[in-house]
Amino acid sequence: MFAAERKVVRELLGQSGANDETLVHRRDDYGRCHVLAAIFAKLVALDDEAVMRVFTFVIAETLTRGSGLVEALGEKLETNMSNHWTPDETFFDLLRHKEAINAMVKQVAGKATADAHITSTAKVQKSIIVQHLDGTRKPHKADWQPRYMSFPMRSYTKRGGLEAVESAKPFAKALKKHAA
Image 1 (cartoon, rainbow, N blue to C red):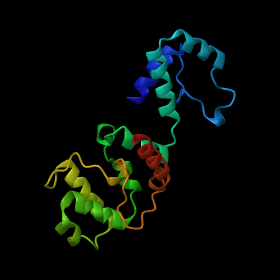
Image 2 (image 1 turned 120 degrees about the vertical axis):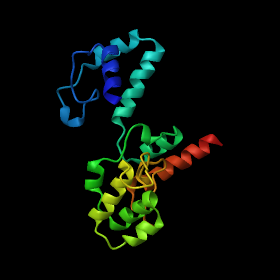
Image 3 (image 1 turned 30 degrees about the horizontal axis):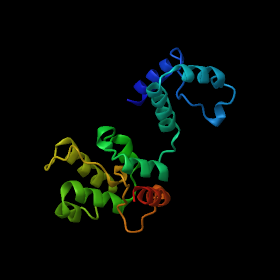
């Protein structure tokens, strides 16, 4: 979806032939950026709706993933990550914390299964989760999302340690204050 929107935005800015990975260049891309005057000229010629579409995309592309701002925006916009992401092999390869993995087993397979596998290896516990997601085991939890992918992001342990959760607190306070 993001790549498709990037293509539309490029067309609006007259850059349809470009195939760069991002529309907004990073610091290390110095010297490869588009000419700002040409982009400005295109924006001036666009209607307000098209300009807002470009600005929205640029803001989305430049947000730092895992930041407090992303967490606050995800919550404010009521983003449902299951529309955009599902746990995949890479997620399970990166998943290492045994206490969190067992808590996930409890979410998808129930307390009895989690308790029965409390001493099983992380590899076994992750395979149990995958089997519930793909329907090999019952109950089938095809739509399961880890707490990390909710807004606000939640931890699986009491010790926390999720930087994005901590850095989102000032944004959450500002949003609540603004809503009042």
